[in-house]
Structures are given as C-alpha cells and as structure tokens.
Length: 322
Image (tube, rainbow, N blue to C red; front, side, top):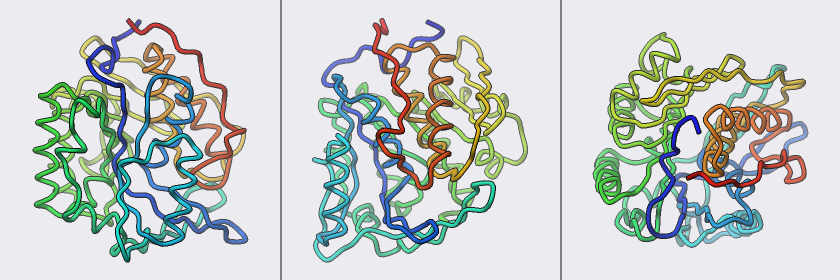
C-alpha cells in the first residue's frame, strides 16, 4: 500500500475514543431539534462505518441527568457508539446551538454552551489517566474545539497526558477545527502544535490553518505539520484536491462533483470518519481520501450534522492491512 497506516499492529483491544462535546442542535425551516458536535459527528460516522467489526468506537464527554441527556445517550447507543466513558453530572444539561444556512449551504452558528455539562466536566472532573490508559484505549481522536473547551491549566494537563499516552504506545488522531470565538489564535497555535508533535494522523482544513498562520498552501501546511512530528497529514480544501503527506511523499486526490449542497455541517467530520475507517480497513491513502470525499459529499446533501443511516454510502470491505 502507499503508506502503512499508523494504527496497524499494536497490543490490546482496538478501541477508539473520541473526546469532545455534543450539543442539542436547533435548525431548519421549520425549526427541528437534533444534535451535533465535531468529535461526536466523527464518532457516529466511524461507528456506522466500522459496525460489525473488531473495532469499538467510544465517545468521552459529559451529559446531565435531564431527559434531553437521556435521549442523547439512547440515540448514541442505537448508533452502536459505546458510552461507558460518558459521565452524567447531576443538575447539568447539554449545551445548545442554533444553526442557520444560506443558499449555498454555508453555516452560521449561535451557541449556548458556557454552563454545559461537558464544560463543567472538562474543568475538573475528567480523569486523564483513565481516559488515556493504553490497555483500554488504542487511539484517541480529538479536535481543536476539544482543546478550546479546557481552561488553560486543564489543557496543559491534557497535553501532558497525551505525551505520556503517546510514549506508552497510544495513537493520537487530531482534527484542527479552529473556532476564533472560542479562543485566541496564539493560544490555539501553541496547543495545536503540541498535539501535532504527538499525532499519528492530522486532519486539517486549510481555511482553518490560514486563520491561524495566514494565507498559505496545502503543501506548506503539510510540510509544517510533518516538521512538527506528525506522521500522516491530510489537508482538506473543500472542492479543491485533498493533499496528504507522509515521510514517503505526497498525494493529491480531487473530490468528485457534488450535485447538491444543502448543509455543510459535518462535512469535515464525516470526511475524517471516512478517511480513518478506510485506512483501518487497509485502504491506501488515495483510496481512503476517495472514500472520505464520497461520504462527505453525501452528508452535505442533507440538512443537519447526522444523515439517516439508510443514506450512508456502502463501506468498502475490510482487507488485510499488514
């Protein structure tokens, strides 16, 4: 294959843990209630794509003890997502966001999340030693939004725990997802670079990288991330070719035309799931990007972050990745 996927081999169970926050989503005309969150979206699509196989997908977050939280937990379990690492906080509730889309499917968000269960959990309740125990967790998936939700001292503790996890043989997959409303660019750059130095796979959106570093090319983003220590760097450019780099070389894979764009919510999150699932199934880098483009292209044709199960493209069969 083009490049050996960093998750191949290893010891212990192949459990993937996705870390972040899910919120109640209100959107559409007329308004409808759903749910979403970047790392949750990726975890849902990963669980769907890997269903029936030997890999378990967990979500690590916090919910309240309210009926909305009960409903979220039930829906995630129905998706095949493992929820043993979902904390329940008494008296708390999930965050909420309202989403508006324009005629091109581009989004605008309005958030109510400062007092959410996940925010409280990330401030003091999350036990990194349990979350990042290599005997239980083979790979951790997190995003720039995940990092932004931690107060500075807890973020520093998380970064130290990630370094210990990596030294113990754990795998780190990172999506940059930079949101300027959540934290300053200088703080984000510093934290992103610490994670990229440890990451086995980085899934970067070029627009977000340009917000952090100024205008530059996908190839420059690849080289910067590889120089920091990341092993496999994927740079998404919307309708332009995706660029992937490893120490072995670079690949440029254009997306197929998309007939209709309704809502770009979870475009990058579903791409990440499609790419990682394909690589776990033994796909080459170009094959994995093609499958990621395919899933993302379907997702943006539906409103909301999570499309119906029966709208999912058929996953490619597992093959030997050794």
